[in-house]
Image (tube, rainbow, N blue to C red):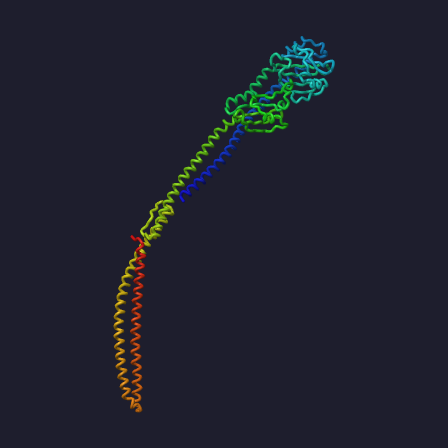
Length: 517
């Protein structure tokens, strides 16, 4: 029973431990995913905030430059007022350029075939012959020539006859990467467009310095779990040819790196509508947590984290919890086993006591001192044993006395019966002898008086003699009956005393089976 109970307890505790472990692992994985997601989103939000701040600063700086370029373009138009494109010389443009401190000025004119707009005069020879069509600006030029306000969402400034483009690398400066800001102004009532531009390398470098690349590098250096961060352009992933066009300048990766690119990533980035997505992917035997968070319509923040490094502390903590849980359950089992063993041993003590009581040992007692209900039961059983012992001893004493008295009674009854038998026999014989003598006497008297029975007095005497004979017979019979009845009574008393003696002996035999103190 004890073994069966301990096996059941151990089985129940193992089941509890198993269920607890499974539940902990489930919640641990859920907690790991939540924590990783929160950290990833926190980093992404930080990058997003940096990009927004950079954009705000860039927009503010570019707006000031835009206004300056607009005023410069109108000033140039005023200087060249009344001249056709063919009448404008490079020297005139160089003078105005130096006066305004510009990087360069180019005059663009529509070709004779009316299918392109090209540079005809410029402060830099490489700008001459530059084609709007090849650069992708032809539609902008046509709008300007038609005296409309250009509808160009990517432009930093637009107004009637003028458009200012964001800082970009100049297509005509292929010798080394140079960044400029261009303004295109169609002079009213003229056949040309003035392109004035300023060098924006410093502005570009400033934006690059405070932009997302710097923030990404800082995060990568400070946070050991971050694998990659990038600002991606989904449009370019959907249409890679956009990366080759000059304007607007588009790149797949606007900032950061995207070396862990997979087909699943491309599938996400080429969707028509991109929502926040995250998943765990194994790359080169390493688990990586990836998140894609839309920044705006054209940009997505990509973030990849080392899933193993991030989950390791939580896994360690969870393993410690699970091991401590198993250890606690094992200690609980040991305590339960010890507690049950003590209870079992105490129960066995009481069972052994009851077994001995069944066998007639009224000296059997149990010692249980655990302060539990079993101790109370043991003490109660011990008191019952003491009371039974006393009761059986008293009963035995009384049975002994009863046996002794019954033996005496039997002996005396036997002797009395014998004496009564002798007396009754003697009395019966005497009474019969007397009856015979009296009867004979009365018969003789009757025979003597019979001849004189006619005499009234004699007749009365004869009747009285007959009556007397009857009385004597009755008295003799009564004496005999009483003697017989008394003899029977004494014999019955003798039998009962013998039976009482047998009962006493039987009771003593039973009492002898008990072990008494």
